[in-house]
Length: 366
Ligand code: F6R
Ligand code: MG
Image 1 (cartoon, rainbow, N blue to C red):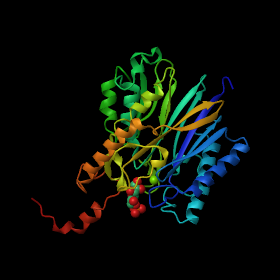
Image 2: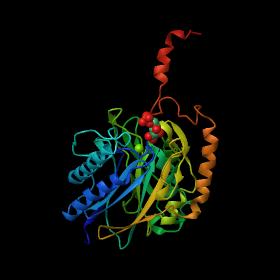
Image 3: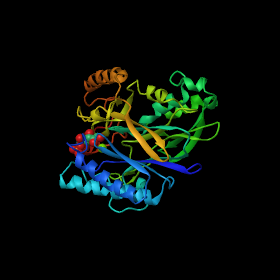
Image 4: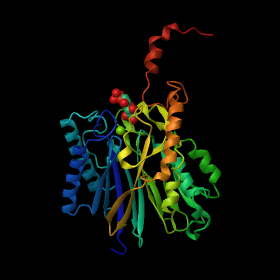
């Protein structure tokens, strides 16, 4: 498959939680496996792997059909529908909330998320898939900045010739619905000025400036079933290519040694530390959190997924987890007070309009 390009597609959806919003049920994951196994035997896809983070299930698929392909999106959609049926049989929690009813061609318009990259396989192709739960779409901004623009994190930026010219970041302004490309190192301060506003500017992809090769992508556009529009902000996935002219695996992982604060957590209405955990610890139970990230490492070989390796299953992340627990303890003491609770307008759920309406006649002009 010398010049043939492989596509790595990762689809995420919440088809019903076990218990509450904490985890997924093994029978739901088995349903996904059966569906994709059958698709594999029919030659529709090259390979697949099923993962989960919290109550979101994730379909990791390789194929040769490019990004935004209708058939691949339909396959992911049908798989999630079958998973939802299993979830409904078990009366799992909130099974009907994450997806619309009728498929329209692209899964991003239906509730689930999709992160996809297409590339010509290198001699060896290490890729990291990051999955999150109780987080929001701007949650990858800080990590992507560190991985691709901070030499204190990524030593290759100053020692690998292929990275010396830096990277181009594509950002989505979710308020104005427009995109912009910013190139580092020259425009580093502009990048930080925008990407630091994680509730408005979302880094959606990164490419290498020397040759335009795609380096990273996140799932950014997602239909918000409750609000009835594109713009769901929850549970984004991120794909990062590593080594030989891209940041090393260890440089990508290094960005998660700080459990930095993200929006999400309980009722998607709080800030909390992003805790890096192994697969088996991706069960957010304390105040429905704190927010989690898992990382699945794969080598892609002839479009096959070799892996996953559970990347955060490493004691060198124990300190990050400890700090996440300490800051959880500190933040939780603030109860419903900002900035632990998100400001009005940023919180996904808020009773405030109803409360204000109840007491509207009691306000006096000053
Ligand atoms: C946020 C989340 C949970 C729920 C919370 C209330 O990611 O899924 O924190 O928001 O458990 O859930 P409901 O409204 O379903 O009772
Ligand atoms: Mg969820």
